[in-house]
Amino acid sequence: MLSVISDNCVEKKKWITAEDMMNITVIAESTPGPIAINCATFVGYKKAGLIGSLVATIGMVLPSF
View 1 (cartoon, rainbow, N blue to C red):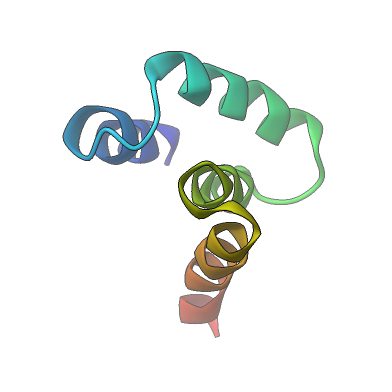
View 2: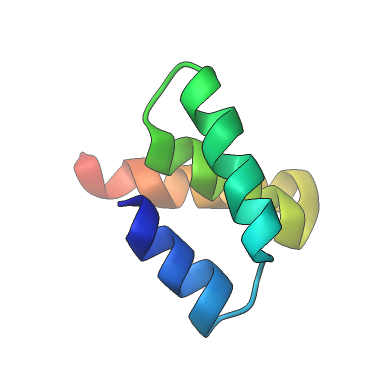
């Protein structure tokens, strides 16, 4: 999952840098919850602040239901 997130967010869309992705991975592994949701929350926050983090988190969680 991390390679897919990295490929899309760093290489294709250029939303974050490779260094940001490395930091996301370290932080996501140290916090509770799935890594993909933590990464999406961070990317959403970097792009659009608090609203972006909420939308990204909901976008990752909602399809599961």
